[in-house]
Length: 251
Image (cartoon, rainbow, N blue to C red):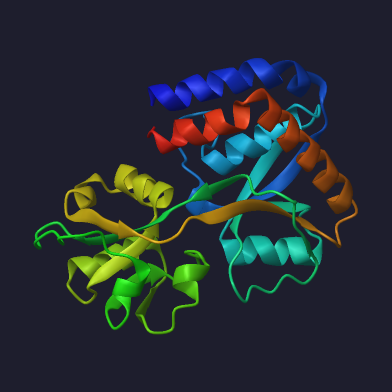
């Protein structure tokens, strides 16, 4: 929490003045990347949300978020109902009709491979190729990077959420589960009794997380330009890396 707080403090110093007078824009946000502290008036948290707030903040704009599944969020952006969707994983075969992508991602994430903690630990790290022929549970509404998504030799057990994927593993209906690290850590906060039952045994290649914009929304292209300019400013100040490091260290 200390590392995250330090990064957030840096960003608050950077953006408070800009937010005070700037116009407010509502964006979509993928629910798997959102941690709701469940406290009165507490802001939604998550690495993608912090990057979006900061990137628009340095451009003099304030944002708030409508939390949706990735499928719903992208549908709203394609239709022009929302100008952008925060925390989208770009995957092989994704329908990119009516979507505008920034030149750079917000950050990269590592999909981690989990096994039951009660089972013997593997002698070496499990990689995606080691999952071929094995039963792997995962949230089918979430991309886990092209290395995993495109491997058709994996026996896929589709789950409606990360929690359901881990429950399939818990009941030994799956040999492994794969989940993004931040998403799993949010699940442990909500269901702390689950964490001790699983161990990380490997990982897939890093994948990129984006804020994607709408071709159909009247502000889509302008907001994309503002966002890219804001990301560049954050990168030059070192603040973008501070956010990523803070969340990677835990919260």
